[in-house]
Amino acid sequence: MLSSSSHLTKEFDSSEHQSLGEVTLPGLPAGSTHFTFPGGAKLTFGQIIALAGDYFGVALEPISLGADRDEKQKRFLAAYRELANCPSDDVYRLTKEFDIEEKEAKSAIAEAKAESDGINKVTTKETEIALKSTRGKYLTLAEHNLDHFNTQAHDAFWTGYELAMTAAVSASKLPKRTAREQRLEHAYKLLAFACHFMTDLFASGHMRAPRAELEATFGAEIGSLLTLFQHNEDGDMGLEVTAKTKDGIKQTWRAYGDGHLFEKKSTENQNRALSTVQEAVNEIHQAFLHQKFTTQNQSALVEMIPTITANNHPPMFKLDANGKLLCRIPIGGEPKNTYTELTKEKAVEILEHHFVKFIEQSIKDRITGYITALKADVKKIKDDFKQLPSQSIFSKSKDANQTNETLCPTPSCCSIM
Image (spheres, rainbow, N blue to C red):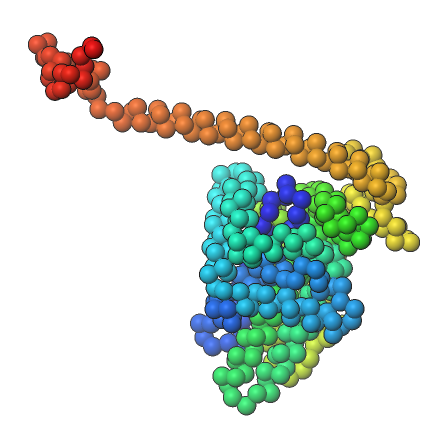
């Protein structure tokens, strides 16, 4: 995915999303770990979560903006088919990068660096591969990523959950075991696609940003930029959230955004996200076993998905009681609970402030990169020098009678013309 310095916002990084799909899948044949798609790709549950929405979808038809339930389901299935029908080579180029990204992220943490330091090493290449694998659709999806935020993410998830539930119930009614298992696999694939949007809701940068309203007011590009600023602030500062366990025990913890999930401070958030994904899988399996459809209101997931507590810094943007967009003031100052209407003039002021910060950080990062590269070059020169033989053409000969002919067997190369 694109780094947080891009104007195209994202939630958890691809490797983070992928890790949240490491769950048990009951009801499938022993050893079943991959799902086969019409395009030829064989993917794990976690890989489907990572690919859904960010890389494969229908950019100009957000699931959450469907006019009614039927329209939302049609949009979800259209998005799902973008992945299902994609040639395997294109898909595998992406999943290969996810593994590299995770390795770099965890290596950075092991070296007492920020997880994002590792992820940023592969961002440019990953973006290039994403553009190639999606035929350029990746950028448009990122610019119109309403389904990954706030109430829209809830809507996208529950739409897919309902489709998966329907598939699971219908699977249980098939007469042949092989057909039942295949249909259950299809239900799990739909659920994995839906779980991308649900796991978005564990990333603090996506919990409260008024993404849809910002785009509706200022257009896709400016709306995406403004969302990015709040996304980054909430993601880095974190938000206190609360939710219940499957057993109904209420818990409170701090959630962080993309580029933080593998860090120690996010252990609780990661575990809660994993357990919620597992519960979603279990509910689909129970529907399969008992031929009973579980509605959203009946699902334990409703209370397992986190909500924000009142103990947090004031949001950069929010809606007032009448749905009007407000921005926090002073711009760029310490977060205070003072607001004014987000007009076009204020939007320009905010953009200017954050672009200056972005440029300053970019210059700092580039200089740091130059210094790091230079230090590495110097170390290599020193190491190479240490490997030189103790006697060379620069060493004093042990034989006082040794001539130039001995050192250089071709006299002409050392002669003065």
